[in-house]
Image 1 (cartoon, rainbow, N blue to C red):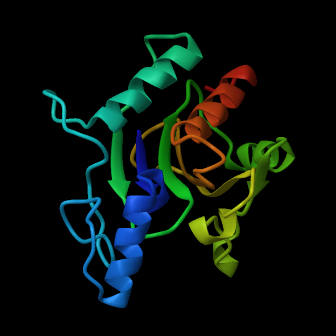
Image 2 (cartoon, rainbow, N blue to C red; image 1 turned 45 degrees about the vertical axis):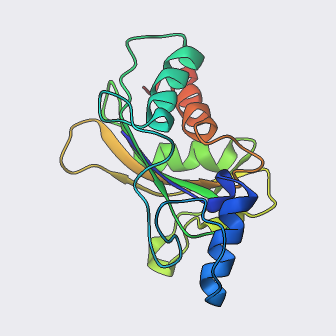
Image 3 (cartoon, rainbow, N blue to C red; image 1 turned 180 degrees about the horizontal axis):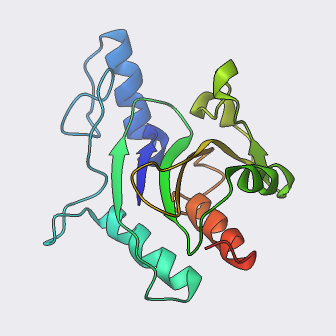
Length: 182
């Protein structure tokens, strides 16, 4: 299960201009039907017949394609948020066996291209503003899901102009599968 929180730069310059105009109190061309400043819009792309958006279905289908496994179950909710760059994802990942949060943290801290920022007691966790103009994927808030066996939650952030919206989740899932953790 993945929920994405995607920046306005994912829509393009028209959306960036809309956000900046709204912050200045200036009327201008709208990229979205609704204001984006001080708001979130739970729709990215158009809705399909099943109630999901094209962006959500793209995440489902791309994950299965990249993993080479149609049995992989993915559900997604995509939300547009008023930040300039950096898409964020809340991931809920189910494993075959009970995962070790310590082992996952260790793997994330030693994985090329991943920066572990996971010390909630010190309020250290990934944020879009810290991923700007960086190629790495930032991972944090790793914890067991107390409602589902063999499941963890984590928070992932990356600069969307350097990484695709679904790439982060897929790369992490591939790594976990490669290391027999999923």
